[in-house]
Length: 84
Image (cartoon, one colour):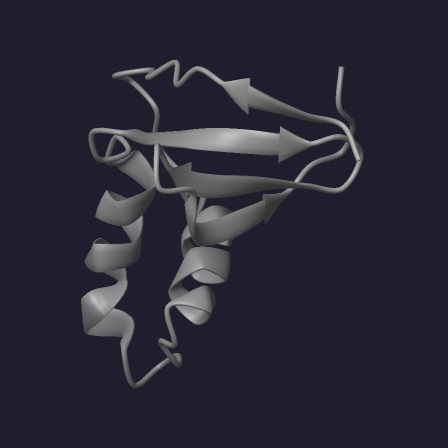
C-alpha cells in the first residue's frame, strides 16, 4: 500500500466550518447540546499546528493518518478523497 509523508501548510486565516467543528467535536466525544460550551476546544484543535515531530502520512485513496516521527505512533485519522 503506497503512502506519502505530507508537509504541513498552515493557513493563518483558516477558520473551520461549523460542520468541521461538529464532526471533530463528536470525534472528541462531545455531545450536543450538553457540551456546546466546549465546542471552542474542537475549533482550536482544528486550527492548531501539529506538535513537533508529527507529520501527516497519506495512505493513497484511503485515509491520512497523523503520526509521530520517528516513533510512528498513530494519532487520529482523516478521510482523503484521493491521493496524488
